[in-house]
Image (tube, rainbow, N blue to C red):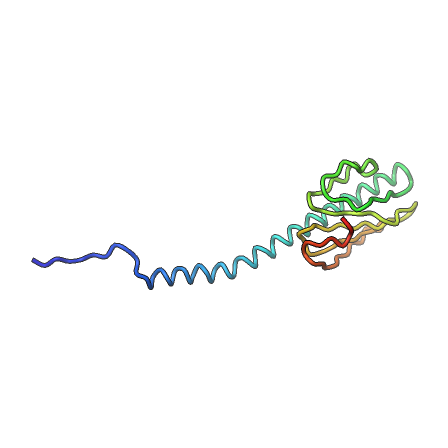
Amino acid sequence: MSKTETSNGFTLIELIIVVAAIGILASIAIPQFMSYRTGSFNSSAESDLRNIQTSEEAYYSDNNAYVNLTPTEGYQASLPNLASARLSELVCASVTGAASNDFTAKAQHKNGDATYTTSQQGNMSETSKAIGLYDIGC
């Protein structure tokens, strides 16, 4: 009688190949994920800046002047003049140079890599920064 042996497992070579394939896929996917994540942080700051701009225009229509905003980070309740401008968490924003006919507003997310600037004319510009550092002063 002949006894046949069957193998019920993976060889070491097969396991090494699978681990190498997972490592290669991870080395491609992780930087892409980080890039998308940074982009979403930047979009959050840009959206908040547009909200501030809209709130400034609403304030201007009632008071015929714009209002300054000291650098403030996220979910603040201390914006009586710009109550409708709700900032996302970790977004720092400021409005400077507010006068009867113009203002300059800036916003950036702490984990983003860009600072956004706009004015009464509505032109928005972007400047790069180091991730995790506020250029505005929060």
